[in-house]
Length: 444
Image (cartoon, rainbow, N blue to C red; front, side):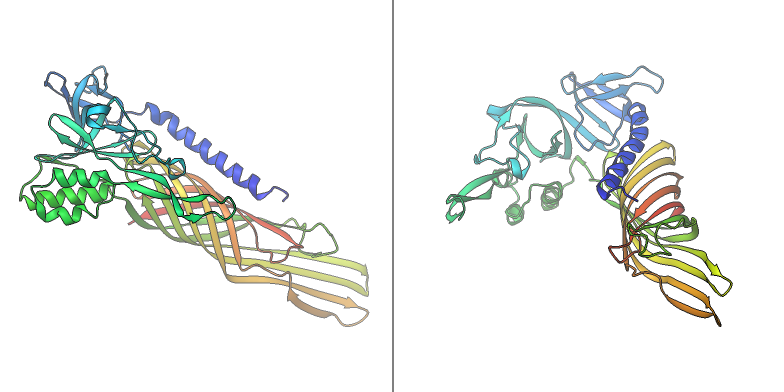
């Protein structure tokens, strides 16, 4: 095979994106209306159904129907004050830069950091997700650039908890090549002082405040400690979705095509450029699927410990005369214990039915090997039999994986293609394996 590894990777990525496009295109039209409540700007309560998308990033609009068969209405933060669906509450917040320091748009990525410790702010109207509501309030926004923002509420205003990572020149360290001072990263953690003041009526948690990180887990823990300290319950508390881990087993068959080639025909005469038959074998193992939170749990990191095998043989005859002839038999068989790791996208079709596609890498270790050539030669006398290793073999095999499948409840079926770098352990003999898997899975 002359196709480069980079080309193979590109093909797999294209196949993965195309398969996801088939799922994502109808997914844009798929609705998921669940019972919900909308609070108007006048304070009226509208009960009905909201198209719930399990938002990872805060929505900028929602679709609402007052009955299942009614025409949908679109709302945004300018047209309603609040909505709630599936134990999630979002409030409309008009954020003002000068007074409330609401929406910060300083560079989020470290590589984009600047030397200004102060954040840059602007005015906007957005939906904030409620984390805690009660005597003390915590709200959350995850913007389109993937930057988390947290807010407290000092009635009637929202206040941004300020945090920024920025660069600062360290004059004590000089770059030997440029003779300039080396830049180091610093943090503006004003949010710690803001929370210390905001939660000052509970001195017992002040030590915990000093160790805060600017993330959901850390702030949730702090506010829970506050309400525990006050021996009170919040009016509303959002329970963050956790990463889910599923375990199971899988079994099926693999069809393997072995390809071995050599540019010099005199080398590896009985193994290179041979048309090997497809080997069909049992394959099976264990699975662990790490299902990521939000986005309706469509994305996961799917892992397997699986056994994969193949076995092929060839027969050759060389006839020169009745007194000088040979028969040659080759056998090539390998069993690998493979660790497969893939990124999976799952699309819910209806009720418990789903489709999925995945792409990833495979690393295998040889656990059984048959690699021999037997030469039975007659040369003007009794026949002689010689058996030896056919070629130097590799004890590991790496490969690229792409698959597509579907399932119902705990059961799944997948058709998967794997391209591996083969079993040859010498540079003079190129080798690769092309495998097609058909696998049934069951989750505990």
